[in-house]
Image (cartoon, rainbow, N blue to C red; front, side, top):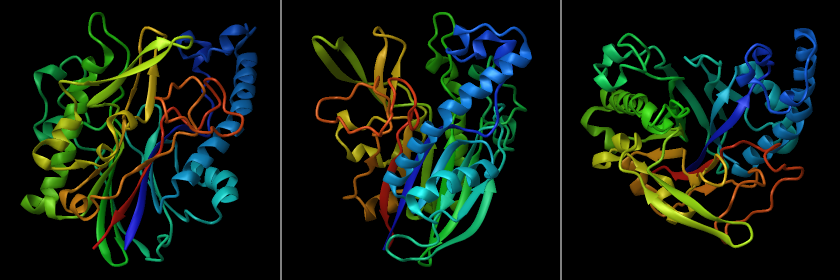
Length: 368
């Protein structure tokens, strides 16, 4: 018996408009900057037209990527609310997959933009085993001081009384054919922009380290010393990586992809001592990436930001299973290592529309 689980940052699955760009140019979409609105009312009309014109193609591709991942349980990031998720499923996924994800779970987290983590489930796995929802717990309320995780390097980023998780650590218990499984869904602090001589990833690293430590504590507090023998899986966008493929070269002469290992990553907290296992590491090092990052030709790399981490018990059972990474929704600007090119979804743009800036990761997990 098995269950197929996927994680996907759907990139701003929202049902509202953002008009803040009228007063803050940094929040303006680049196409809006080509036009000059005479007043705020006209800017709002322009923004509505821009957003709606882009949304249909985008969400068709988002739906195609989810359909291709074909998960029994889908963990999502960047979802506004359950109503938005219902509308997306009915308007897009239903046309592609039928009445698949009848059950949806989400709680409001801490993100200032109102983007949350969520879970959608089928009633049965593809194998026919019933999927039974048992319980859901939010950990959005946990503070640094409550967990004793406030450290000096956080001084510029947070206060002791602040909440640790920038969105949430959503804990969901299910039974698959009667067998228990605990799922943790996270979306860690984004890397942000550079601060002077400090790159954005390094500057915000203390927050992600604290989030990882808090997540590990939540699991060990619940399962104790036997955590490694239990069935838990951690899914989500960690906004961090342990390795990346640095890209050099150009279109005319070809591109090179060089693996580079990072000295420090928040993932180390969860992977140390074999506490959890990164399932994507079953793939070759050049084929683990889930996101393309670029700030122009001088700064380009591929990296894994999206993870399915398994408890040692689950890893031992399904060691031969290799996760799938769905990349057909990537925009044309994404550079693929040789041999990894895919046929992109119809109407994919150079930068947009696209399914998301992230790729879904899906894994068939054996349960015995």
